[in-house]
Length: 349
Image (cartoon, rainbow, N blue to C red; front, side):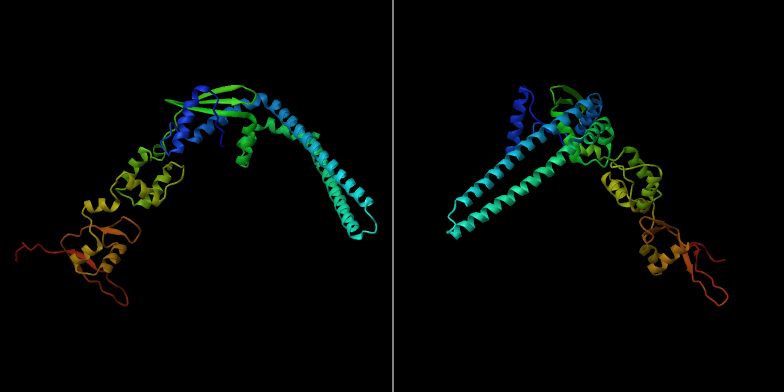
């Protein structure tokens, strides 16, 4: 909903001149206010004010419709009289022409016929419009208008009501709205008919504060990153009932944005600080290929911790161990295993 803002007090004239100059020179505005809180306050005022005067407004609408229909009827009658006069004038011209002058007679006859066709079209249009206007002034139309006035709150809050219809209702009820921004925002509403009402609301929060993630959400994300990946953190936040500033559920990307915005250490960084090894590092230590390390990790032979999807993980250090190869056979197989290597300081017996 957009409300037309106009000057209603003389002492506000310097402000408007300053604002106009700032816009013209691309400078800084004297004041700016986000529109959504203003719209909500004016909407609430409308819902409170319309109920007592709903019937009066409906009757005023009915009178306005009747007045406009009457004006349109006068205009159509004037057009119809004009068409009749032009058709009669063309007829007289045709009757006065010399019958021997066939070219002029044919031209005047064609003009007469054209004027008659235009007159006939005007008459049919006049009858059609008159029938439609009577429908607007009938009891059924009057009942619809009165019903709309009584159910104003329902119509206003109906999601199927188009914004343009709300604009029309506001234009019918409100003359103008004046804003003055100080410690709080003052809203001066002037209704049609002269009645004025003043409201005061808190200044809308800057969009940066509105979009800021709640401190408890940031704290929860920081705690969950110790044991969860970003995707698991998003699922856990949704289970706890947390939502972002738009009321949407958390996703993997939204958690990543929060983590980077508040400089939280990632799951990978936390695991590395705890001494976890990559697949390449552990493969060099054990003397096997990286693919074997990943296969052993999925099989449970090595302790692994995810930091991304199932293919991104770090492994727990295995210490000083020796790999014993597995053995396969027709009736059974023996998987590879890791055994602790003997200490180099241990002497022979």
